[in-house]
Image 1 (tube, rainbow, N blue to C red):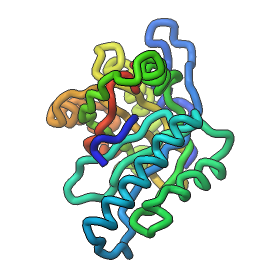
Image 2: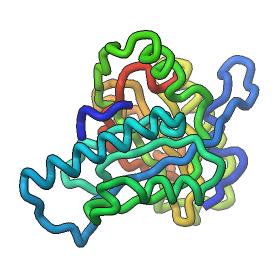
Image 3: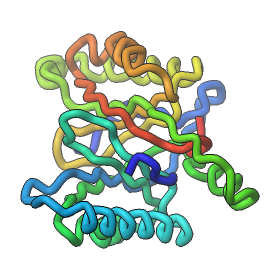
Image 4: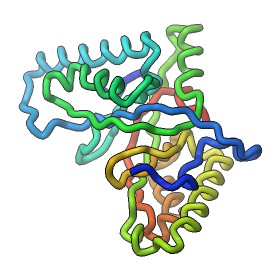
Length: 240
């Protein structure tokens, strides 16, 4: 899969898709699909595995042609908790969920999907699609991007009286990372649990991304917890 193509939260949090100079909100609504191994999956023969992977890839390509899949790619984690993601532009969470559940690996009970609304920056996948329409043989140039999922930290409730200030400092810090050219995209996730947001770095070393997030004021205060993954994505997919 590595060669793939492409808790409502306080209003002050995760306005990452802003113009860092003009400070005007610029967000787009996407649906992010976390593809996870099905705990009940059974072993497959190589032939069956190859057939299922081919069907999975064909489905990805069709979703791209249909104009609903703006990004996709596998995670390179050990142990595997998330296999990869799809990023859709669709009319509703329900339609995104239905489409994700039609993936052949889900129908074959190899994977499960979690689908959430994500407020990310406009333009994800646009340049990729333009270049590949002009030149179908444009190289994918897959690269590994540190991807950070942000959750409630251990001090989320403990620091309730100062949480808004801490989250505002967090917002400013992420804006700074954006202005320094470290990020490819970031934004708030609407999830029913303690998952709050997603920060995708440019293809920098994972150790550097860890260090940068350790310096985030909200992570330092324990208000947010950073969970890292390595996401493989093609060139020209992320807009920042």
